[in-house]
Length: 528
Image 1 (cartoon, one colour):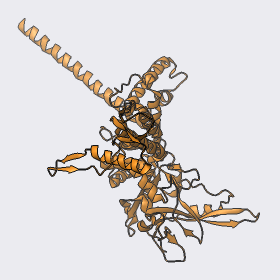
Image 2 (cartoon, one colour):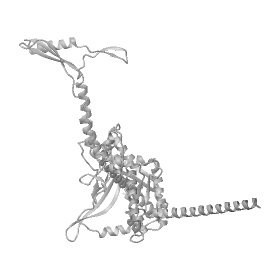
Image 3 (cartoon, rainbow, N blue to C red):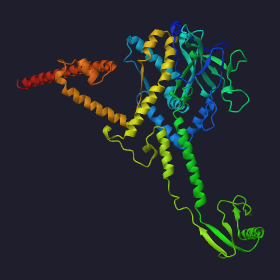
Image 4 (cartoon, one colour):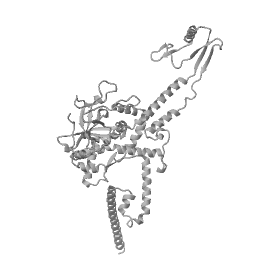
């Protein structure tokens, strides 16, 4: 089958791949389906609580979990902390301080990064994009270019439902001269087939998406035409990408079961019910049951009023969990007796439900204090912040770092298409590019202020050693932690402010001289 989409020709990578030999197969960190050259591609199967059979169903399960009110509240907290749209600064910006290249190249990279953000509509859809990635655990985009004019770069980035696409890695096993089996990468591509990957378990229509040498199913897409970002969270076998919501499956099911059982218990045990002990004397079993049934029918009164029709109905033929109890009593015992069965005494206890709620929040790495909106959330100094908030802030930082790979993958294709860099240069650059996400976490602000205060105090203490044992550049870089761009901008601002102050002093001095001359002339004129 012909590949759909474009493909970069990387001769250096092909040559290096031919030279590389290892008895250890390459790590499968992207959840791709690994097949042997000449074999077939099959859907990935997983069984969670006996309900999920395919990867598409697993994504559906994550989306259903995210619709739960408590999980949705936790996901909102995470997304609101990771993506800030109501700030004066950009939602995300690129940082090239560690990139050793010319300023003109840096300027081009920044411009292309802005183009990518516009193609993604990230300024307006940043929250939805991040939430989609967090819930599904994976994010696919089809990179659309004009193949007749590839130097125009990316024309459009179109979202692909992760249930409809699968990455495939084709390897070839062969033995070397020493008899050791070596796995070599033959090809990587994606298979797009919504009808195939969405087949439910037990269907006779195979979940096979693509088979070499047989009737082709699905579309084989070049790996360069797809940009792909995962959560980096894998199952123990490293064969399937999991979402960050995966840990919440069991706690959520336990919480739902506990809530349902609590509702049933409260409904069934809330009212008091009567117990009728009926004396049946020495009647045979059949006669006793018939007598007891006749008494139940005689004294049972279930006439109800239907407000919708205005009719009075007799519903005595239906039994409910709130019925009275009728029990026969033989000779020798006490006579007919009516007693009451008291209702539940512990209907107000919620400890079990609260326990599973806290367990669900802990599985999502969200502090339990955020589950209690009635509790005032106060923040003091950074040294007084709770440990859970510190862990949560670090978790958000890791999420941003992982999510930033989507920008790196798209930026690589954009720079190569526009020939701003080569493969060799990109291999050196990609590990040095960083992304700065806007923040509004009050804890982060407090921490930054305390760190800045400590740096200024340290700078004041070592001021007498600057110029003697330490250079000014060293102090600014390693004490004040100013980046190269910040040092450059600050120097410009200082020079500009000094120039403005110098002009102001000159104007003031000239103004004082003019005033003195005017007073001198007036004085001598008035005195002849």
